[in-house]
Image (cartoon, rainbow, N blue to C red; front, side, top):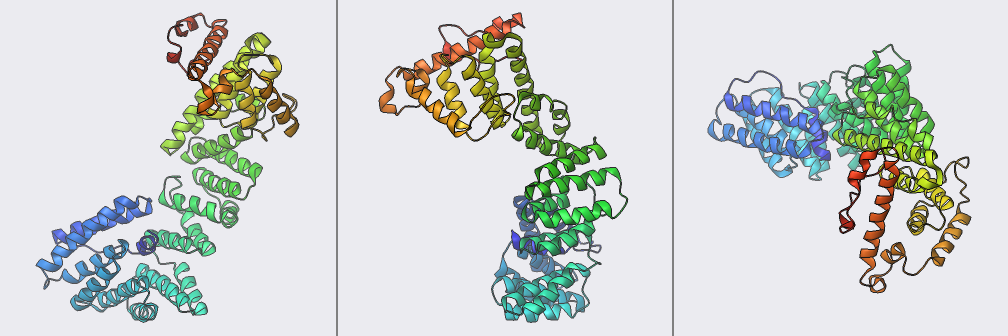
Length: 493
């Protein structure tokens, strides 16, 4: 859809009273909106509808005053749909129907766009130049300059190509939609600096919602060219007095760009600044999500998770459903994790299995790998001869290299891994966890059942620990006759 995005520089204006053209124009505008929102499939369906509607106008009313407008609109829609040959044919009809010098220039320019896509760069250069010599609108002028720049690049006319691209980027008369499409187009061809320049002008006045198409674009640009976006945002933050919600959005983008540069602490500072500027804004919610993600990833001791409990509700207001759902899972897992740690701290080694379950939560649900490593190692120190020792050893080895805070758990890295593997080798051959990871031919017929029983017994043990604090936990103990039905989610809160 790269070319489709390049072509979104144009928006049909003017009042059209003929019903078919009115509907076609509305459908075209809706298609552009879908394109800017990155809903490419929806946009394609709408462009197909535009092609069908305008085709009927051309076929049924070729002598009407609407025929040239219909042919131009059909050409635009075909270009968006990457129907290059069809666009050439329709632009020839538009040229024949042209009722004004402007429509004639637009028809020729659009044909030049199609010819460039077909690889006819010389012809494209000529047609686009003719189009640019006419009295056309600012959006079409920027489109034709951009496309001619690409054609001239392909022809080896680098200096002239640069002038065209620079002129397109510096066009101050573009509509918002045209400017947005231009900055996306410049990004798509790797002109990140020029793309950022156009985006910066839009950011000064745009709605600061993270789900706004402009912010979606800037976010993707921050991934591709983080230092460029970071510099752009720094100018916006320091160069003017802006409302708090917009400033929060700027800090959100800045944080994302700093993540892309590997500047994690600076990114966290930017995300925190977004929350501080406008805590109830969508930008703050997204910033809280990204900050929480980073802090969970870097957690090295249980207190690091406890410190985040106030961040989860803010992150759960994110503008994106996937982020809201993940923040909700984080909050649930963090609450469960805190309860497990409290159970261990209150009962010591007699509640050691709480640490084992906490390590699993840290690894799988919270993605806090150093915290998981610490939990597994702590469990092995507390009950080295546990029937679940193999489970803990495998867990610790799976997150090797992620070291916990030494003030919490001692981890000597590779030396610790050597010791863990030695302990595995010394375990009985019929250990259910060893068997579960053995080749199928070595397991035996009871291996799976033994593993299920061991897991069910671990869940019973966790419920027993929980009963020390919550007598109703007895209701969740699995029946002895049905260990496989044990509730895998039932642990200490």
